Length: 152
Image (cartoon, rainbow, N blue to C red; front, side):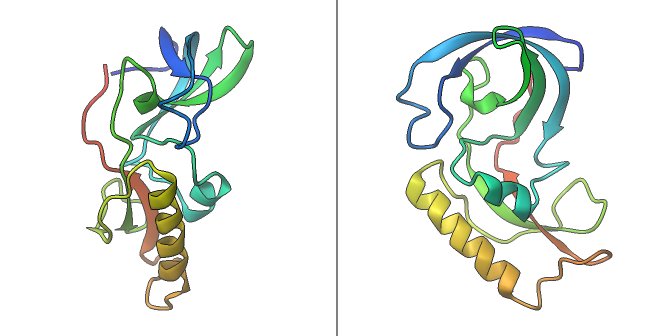
């Protein structure tokens, strides 16, 4: 498992938009890991997802110091050559504080513009439903990556 302080080299795309990620050039990115986020144990909130809905996302999000750019950046490991994964996302219901979904409520959304547009619509529909609680102490809507592989 990757841990804070580990130094690795990722072969990473220059663009992470779902339309471009598989068709753009790739660069070797030497990074030093600051933190690793598991999008099953710590899934995306609707607000986080909606900030950039067309990013190619995967289960493992690494915050790291990018030595080539001399700045801190975030990397979805599934977009790298070393940790390639399909990047399928789903909506799920979580209980507050839970690290596993209580219930997965959608089929998978592929990393395509069409499917990510559908995910946005579905998310907005679910959030507009008064039955789906989103407050403190209630069930919460979250976005998870449907990739259950472990990493290095």
